[in-house]
Amino acid sequence: MSRHTAQPECPVGSGSTGLSFINNLDAQLRAIAELQLASRNRPVTRLQLKLFYSGEPAGRLSFDLNGFSPAEAVALARDIGSHPLIMREIDDCLCADPAE
Image (tube, rainbow, N blue to C red; front, top):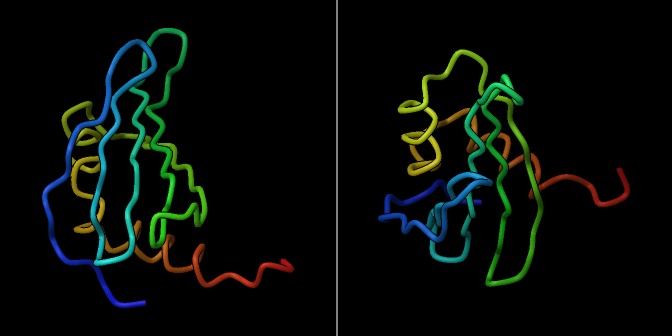
């Protein structure tokens, strides 16, 4: 899989469940980043990624963002492609053996 090309994201929703952004990672790969910010009831900010390749569901990933400020978490969710560790996890998810 080739590395991402920077393309603008688009917010797709917000509300009590959090924020969502569409990230265009390359010509065929998209990630919907759903961000649930920490609160009194949920002490850790969680980032969930729904991956789509050629418009078809391709996988899901979830990350607890310990130590991230709300602004840092939003910046990450808006620009997934500029974060090499997240991109490596996406590559691993997409290239994993389906039998595992």
